[in-house]
Every structure is written in C-alpha cells, then in structure tokens.
Length: 137
Image (cartoon, rainbow, N blue to C red; front, top):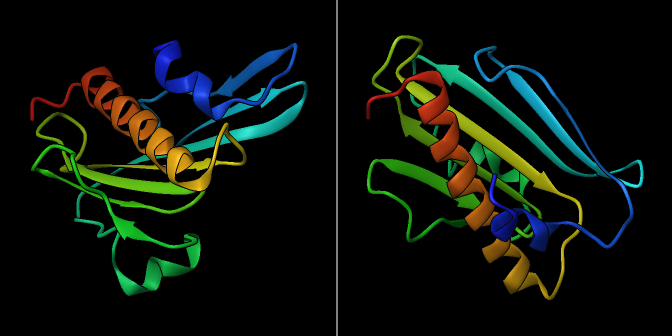
C-alpha cells in the first residue's frame, strides 16, 4: 500500500500496527490499528458468483450509500461515509470474483473527503489483491 492512499485514513498517533492473514485465504482479514485502536478493517474474499454491492439487502452496511464512480469498468462498487465494497472479476486460479470490504473508523477531513479517501484506498487495495492472487482480468 502506498502511504499516499493510506495516510488520509489514519488519525494522528505514535504506533501503527497491522494484523493480517494471507490474501490467498478466503476470507482474508486485515486490521490497521493506531495506538492500539482499530481504525481500518478489511475483509477480502473470493467468490464464484457475482456479489452486487448495491443490492438492497446490503444497504444496512452503509451510511449514505452511493454507487462508486471513476473505477474500472469491470468493477462494481458502493461507497458510504465509513464503508466501501468492491466486486471485480478475477480470471484466475481461485475464483471468478474478488470482493473487498473496507471499514474506516475515522479519517482526516470532512465526510466528502473521507469518502473519496476511502474509495482511493479501496481501489488501490483491490487492484493489489487481484495482482497478488493471480487474477489476469
């Protein structure tokens, strides 16, 4: 992860800690803590069926959910004030789709900026996951 997309989501603090498992596991979990307080939680999983982030059954996960814009055409995404979900195709050895869910407890700035920061982080993270697990699309 580049510091440019991660740091806007992190509060000031002295100690950054990452707790994570292997991305090859499904589901895979990652938590970022600042001074022992959870600030970002990431769940990534591989699926054989399409998961729609804008499905009405998923609305409870979000505050002010909106469809993500400015993401790759083959991706589907939803963004909220503190939460995002991206589903993307994965032509590769494991599954047909990769789903990334990110919860950011805080962040710098106002809500509109935080939403943009979460989307930037989610987009970069999802691209990295696809590369790491061998998705060719």
